[in-house]
Image (cartoon, rainbow, N blue to C red; front, side, top):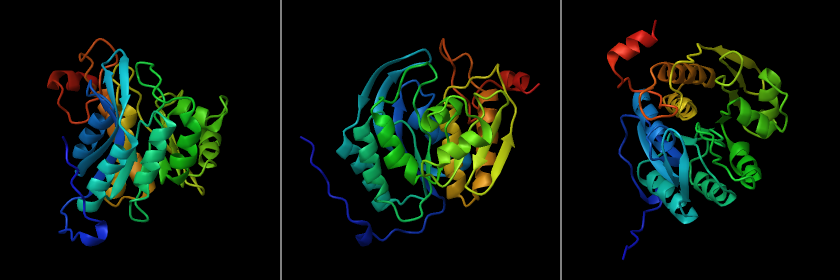
Length: 286
């Protein structure tokens, strides 16, 4: 039998000052270690912030397929976030895989626990790198109304942005504007699926294009998670949005460039921590 341990309310907790910022990832777990919570924690570590988690789903997956998804109960999602927020504190949040409307509702409840003004970065995860669908069709409305609409910045790739906008023909600034019309303060449409690897940032006032190199021979599993987690970390560290978006682009691109292509039989994971063989890394830089 598991006994619940009550957590003191935030008003009752006196926190000692922290030496580094804290980021909370609310996302799914990838058993293959390439994306989701696992990718977020590696990106947080690379950025120099402390990573905490509220897991929304447990996936059985590898580099070629997602074979099973088991959602975490809504109350447990909220409990994880509450435990972190009330004791440790949170300087920025990254939201990834939700999967269902019920999970989106739970994450919205968790966001209500945050102090006002806490940056929230939303990566609207819909499809895994292997092609598996990670978001129920019924959950899209909940994602938009409960999560995207209250985001500081949402970071869809091109296919995700077109689904959110409801228009398969849009691209560039027009697409970013259409996604921002759903309610977030800003949008970064990432460039990995575009003809040119250019991210498009729109904050309601200006459009900023962030150019980068494309690395077709790299390994991209977890690149979107790495980008959004790095963006959240940089906001927690005090960067303004354009600076945070540029750093996220740089880190994610280099992680793809240095990706671990020999891990698994499918799309290998990005290497944000530089753990790959040095000779492979040197060759990828040429």
